[in-house]
Length: 170
Image 1 (tube, helix red, strand yellow):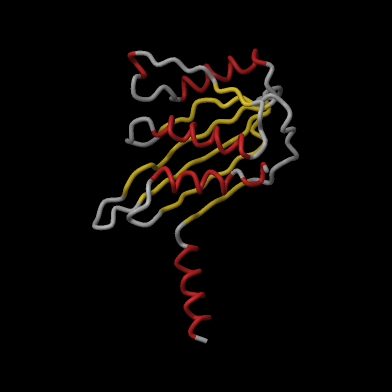
Image 2: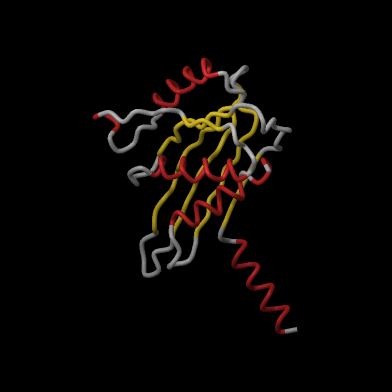
């Protein structure tokens, strides 16, 4: 009985660590050409969007999406710390139209930090969306937030969250 109660308490604690929402994933053609666009950084953490892109790229490849090209974003003086803002994403979409890709993947980072306090828990909040290039319509999207324990890395929490959100693409 004590084990059952302990297991129930543990599950309740773990359930409060992550929140996700996603639309129903259509059947994607994994053999098609995919493009990873810049991720918008809505945080105060420099280069959080670039970190999100790197983890997302690896995760998508692990899910079997092998014809994945990353948009060749160029750092300029105006975008030294974060090359992906709304204007950059719009420019990238124009490039995607000419690329021959079927799908474009983009998203936003809304939180990427360690919380203040004694434990300094990592916290990540992101959105991911897949766009049908021909119609320019979002055909799948997901949003999620996750926190970890004091000794975990933000990137480890992000990797778990991205893997969870993109699991329907497997």
